[in-house]
Image (cartoon, rainbow, N blue to C red):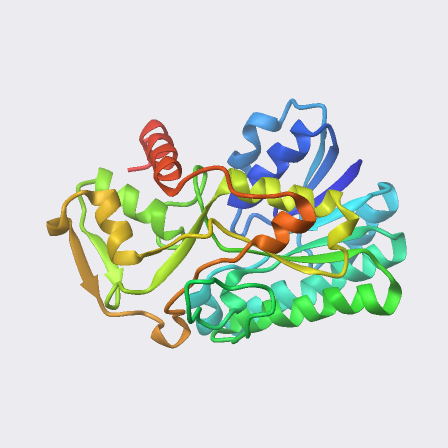
Length: 315
């Protein structure tokens, strides 16, 4: 198939690109590099399936129009977004424009050219999990940050195009994804930051009490889920979760990575109002509709991520 992948130079986007190329598709990547890195695409530069990398914004309608007119896309995997919660609190306009308005521009092109949309949302739209059954797609949502609010608004637009126009669309909500190629700085994920600090001999700082839990999904499992959501008509018009199905307190995660409680410290939370105390995924719908289930354990995923950070000298 011919596929447009927005945000393809980002952390998850890079792995989705790898998966799509392995599956034999032709892929065009659109990324403005505000969060992604062109280096993430380096190993695919000579791959015959990577047709083009376009440095451009989803907010530039002329760039989008040219892409859609020139290439008959079958699917658009829309991962391009602002993803930082604190940034959305500090500067909600940028997040709203990128995540909501940008998604609208993508939808309009896909409607005109009859292209399926796979929209990458987030587990951050959910209210806290109250039990051990986990969060399914019917769980209450709570826009505790402008990031979550922008994603919910975009989700509603994506689903409206399914109901109003019959456009095949799907909203996917992966839980906290980690793995190789994730940034290890302040804007990275908790696993990458903890591993980097451990290897650099630094303290692992935890926001708040550290009792908050996360369901951590290894990035290759996530990429497989993203790809499969595009391939299957069974999820059209649906919202679908993906997660490990196991949550871990940040305190326990830090200890697992550091192996030494004296290396761990607690600091004041930078955005306590948008903290979700418990995140645990019920991804049974993905299993039922896509035959998807996670394959990489947390321990194995952390081992692979640490190995990559060591090998790339990101300390």
